[in-house]
Structures are given as structure tokens and as C-alpha cells.
Length: 451
Length: 132
Image 1 (cartoon, chains in turn purple, cyan):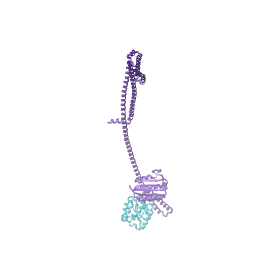
Image 2 (spheres, rainbow over the protein chains, first blue to last red; image 1 turned 60 degrees about the horizontal axis):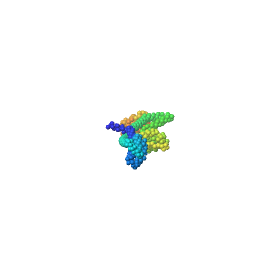
Image 3 (cartoon, chains in turn brown, green; image 1 turned 135 degrees about the horizontal axis):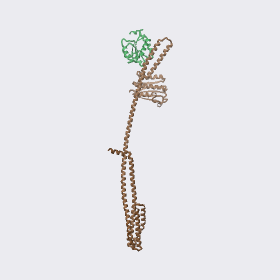
């Protein structure tokens, strides 16, 4: 039944259904209205016909009664017969006026009605003439007039017209019945069609709603799938970026390590060799005068300064003490050296925790970066560094009492913050920064003890 | 006075050459040998009789560490005097080395003069050093 289904779908599709329904509703309305008008017109017509029939019957009756009274009077000569004749005669002319008035309102029967009035008047004038002749004693004249066909013809004429009007009235009644039936049929058919169409419309609307639901469901599903895909893509990209950043961090650490090793081995060797040479030269030039001795001494001092600088650079590049001394001692040394260098007292409270190399380095680098920030920006008079264990977590806190800043107004990438944060995150931890203008700065890193 | 026999365990050729030259010039010592890895040093130093009076040992070597060398000499109860000359003269390293039988720990950068003085002192305390 695919063809039927398609036709049904097309018929019930919103594009056709609306106009068809409206057209049919209009048609039903028109049929009803037309039917109503027809019946109303038929009703009016029938009322007129009914009136015409009543009037024509009355004319006939009156005429017959007058004729009967006239005959009674003529046959008996008694005056008593004339009473009804006179009474009818008084009613006769107003009745004919009514008939004429009706004739003016009723063009279809005008001719008939006027003929009727004319026939009735002639009949009456005949009766008046006969009675005059009879009362004036001219019996023969009266009889002669009576025996002529004039009276009978007029009577027949009146009868014919009355019958015709009656026939027409019956025909109109039948016709009205037919029209009523036809109007009833078309109204019924139209209403039935309309109801069917309405049912179809309801069906179509429901169907449309269902289709829209299905469509909407599909759309939402697609949207959801698209979002999932995007999320997956973001996850993948984030993972890739994280991997890349971790890789770069490792490369950077490796590079720093290589540089530190080179500085240590090569530059360290050269400086030691120079120191040895200075010692040898000093011995050889003993007694050559204070100027030479002073230059030699100065050269030794310069070399020592160079050696100290090299050491600091190497420690910054790769804290060898982390591997040699462990985290606690390294941080204590770091804090002490910072205090000496920056002349800001550092209160260090470092627990002896056993962390793997990556975590130890992360803690070391966070402290390093935080202290660098303190010396660069904080204008602090005291720094506290605290490393402690809290269950399975390591908590590192570096706080100063310096000028602080508004974290919202600082670029996220500045002050090495993102670097610190990334380092801590890549160890599975979290870094929180708290600061406000005039209230110092606190950096707190929390990371798991083990991977 | 016989010169003090010195064995240098050091992986940097520059330092090796300069150290040997400087010591021989400034103290009554004779450098009798070098090694740049822990294994070579142990092989050379653990022979009987010992090839030297004084071993100057660096901590970081081409392979292994000076600590391994110190440990081996202690296990052998070697009569050789051992000192450490290192760039890592941090307190911990120092303690560790002394615990492993090193007589002294010198910093390569700042204790050169002290090392020369030490050699002179040791040579004077060991009159027949050259006869072993």
C-alpha cells in the first residue's frame, strides 16, 4: 500500500489539508445558507399561496352563498333569504379589495387573482341585476338573465381559478419538501465531509507533531554526537598538548642537565687548572715584590668569584644537591642561599619526605620560582616556606608579607605561574595562588606523595 | 727525603695534567699513575704491595664513583692514605667520604692550596715513603 500511504501522506500533509478544509467549510456554509434562504423563500411563497387559497376559497364560498340566498329568495319570494345575501354583500367588496392587495404583492398569481376579482364582480353584478329585476316585478327578465350562461360561466371561472390556486399551492408545498430534502442531504453530506476532514486534520497534526518529535530527537542526537565528538577532540588535543608540554619540560630539564654537566666538567676543569696554575705561579714568583703578589692574589680572588658563579649557575640549572642530599637539605640550602642573596629572612619548615625525582624536582622548582617572584616583585620583609605531609599528600606553601597583587589583573602566563602550575599538575597535583594588593602572596601546591 | 708517591683517580685530563704538574712542582711528590674509572683505580690500587703512598680520588668518575674506590680500599685494609678532591665537597659528601676511610676531603675550586700543604705535611711525616 505504499501508493495509498503516499496519497494519504500528501493529503494529510499540512500544505494541502488547510486549504481543503477551509474550502469545504466554506462550501458547507454556502450550502446551508443557500438551503436556508431557499426554504425561507419557499416559506414566504407558501404563505402567500396559502393566503391566496384562503381568499379565493372565501370568494368562492361567499359567491356561492350569495347565489344560494338569491335563488332561495327568488324561488320563495321570502325576504328572509335576502338577509344572508345582504350580509355577504357587505363582506364581499372588502374581501375583493384584500384579494387585489394580495395580487399586488404576489406577481406570479396576479393575473389569476385579478381574473378572480373580475369574475366575482361580474357574478355579483349579475346577481344584483337579477334581484333588481325580480324585486321590480320583472320576473321574466330576472328569469331570462338567470337562464343565460353568464352566471354559470362566472361561477365556473371562479371555481377554476380557486382550484388552480389550490393546485399551485400543493405543488409549491411538494417543491418545498423536495428542496428541504435536498438541502438536508447536502448539509448532512457537507457536515460529514467536514467532520472527516477535521478528523484527518487532527490526525495530520498529531502525525506532524510525532514527525517533529522524531526529527527533534534525531537533531538532538546529532547535536549530542557532535558535542561528544568535539569533546573527544578537545580531550585528544589537550592530551597532545599536555604530552608536548611535558616533553618540552623534560627536554628543557635534560638540556639544563647537559649544560650543568658541561659547565661542571669542562668549565670546572679549566677553572681548577687555572687555580693550580695560580698556585704554581705564586710559588715561583715568591719574593718578586708586593705588586706581583697582589696581582696573583687578585687573580686568585677573580677565579674564586668565577667558580662561585659557576656553582650558582649549575645549582640553578640542575640542583645536584637534590640527588646528593635529598629534598629537605636542598630546600634548606636553597632558602638559606636565597636569604643571603636577597637579604630577606626566610623561615623554612621543611619535613623530611621521600619523594621520587620528578616530584622532588617539581617542589624544588616551585620553591625556586616562588622565591624568584618574591625577590622580583613582592618587596617582602619575611618569607615562610613550609613543606609538610598531609595524609597521602604533600603540601608546599610559600608565603610572603609583601605588597601582593590582584590575581585577576595578572596575565595567567606571567610570573612563571603557568610553569609552576603545569609542573605541579603533571605530578597529579594542584597549585593555588592567593594574593591581594597589600596582603602578601601565598602559593600553595598540593600533590600526591606517589605517582 | 724520598718523594711521596701519588696516584690520581680523576676523569678530567685537564685537571689530571695540571694537578700532577702542580703537585710535583710544589711538594715533594711523584705522580706514579692515573685512573679515570672506579674499576681501573681499584685494579691499580689494590695490588700488593701498594703502588703509592697517597691516592687522590675524585668522586665523579667516567664510570663508577670515588666512593666505590674508597669502599674497596677500606675492605682491603689498604695502607694507602686516601684523600678526596672533588667539586661536590658538600657537607653530606664530606661526611660520607670520611666515613668510608678518606683522610681528608678537598674542594677542587677552593682547597688547592690546602691540598698542597697536606702533601707537604704528609711527605714530611713519611721519611721512607719511596721505599715501599
